[in-house]
Image 1: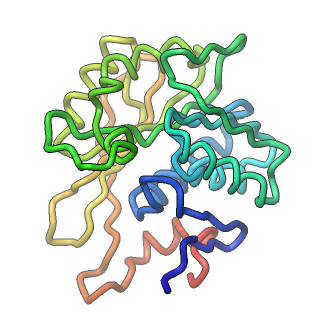
Image 2 (image 1 turned 120 degrees about the horizontal axis):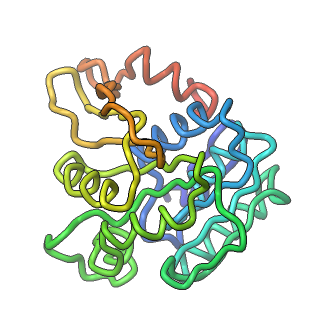
Length: 241
């Protein structure tokens, strides 16, 4: 029987309850966000749509002063996040909430906000309702997400989003309408001869010249061998790197 958890070097992510499982793309997002925020004094962080709690756990490992609130609208995802937080070394700095973003209110703003959002718009829905919530944006549009992030983000803070390349232009348009501007962009390509299929972006309220996207390639092209850049990014987390 296959494991229902994903073991990292410093923590374990159980994923038997949450609809969306640990993915390589999400791991890259967590690692690059931890690196980006390491020297930016991100003391109060919000994780929108926590799923298993993976992103919060990756950030907690590297940002040892950060206090993180992770929220999810789906009950099983919330319970999974809560379970994984309770079994981690950083449970005193991690809080799981079961609520929709639309009803979430915070008395103070956040220095950092991370989200691996529902991203498929007008695609065929799956038959499982919790997976629909996790994958499709009908319940939380890009415009609504950008508006809520802008309202919750500190004026000097930044947010980190992961989208399919096909949805990226629509997200950046929604972000700009809500005064969120790209500060750093990382494209993810699976192999050297494949086009990027995912994009990670950091946005702030400071309007600057649009950045030239960086690119990370996961596999060398020889089977499933990781590239040196991927290994360097993930070696603090992946068990066998």
